[in-house]
Each structure stands twice: as structure tokens, then as C-alpha cells.
Length: 63
Image (tube, rainbow, N blue to C red; front, top):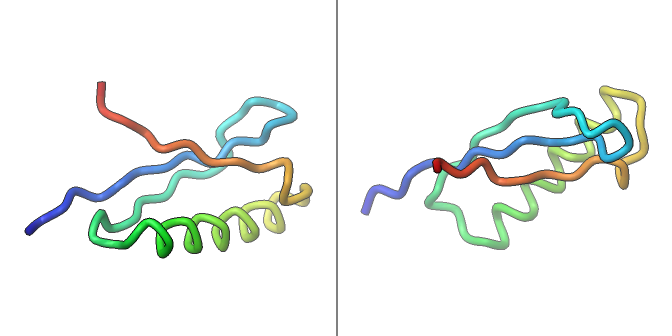
């Protein structure tokens, strides 16, 4: 079964600006996806010099 990749945007909650985009394999389990998104959120926060709790992600859905 070929599951489509999932695309996410990481947003600075204080500014509302998207600061990073990332894609993950749709074949990952929900737990693996959450763990990977948490890891990336930490990296994005460090790279941008902001608190980790300031960054959140949203899945980008085709509409």
C-alpha cells in the first residue's frame, strides 16, 4: 500500500508566521509521526532562538 506523504508547517505562535516546512512518510505510525514532529519542533525553535512552546505544527491538507 502506497500512502501519501504528509506535509506540515511549523508556526511561531507569537507572530503567526510559518517558519519551517517538512514532509513525513505517510507510512509512519501516529506515534512515529508525533515523535518526529516533536524532534523537528525542537530543532526549529533552537535554530530560530525561540522557546519550543512557541512553535507548533499544522498538517497541510489539500483542499
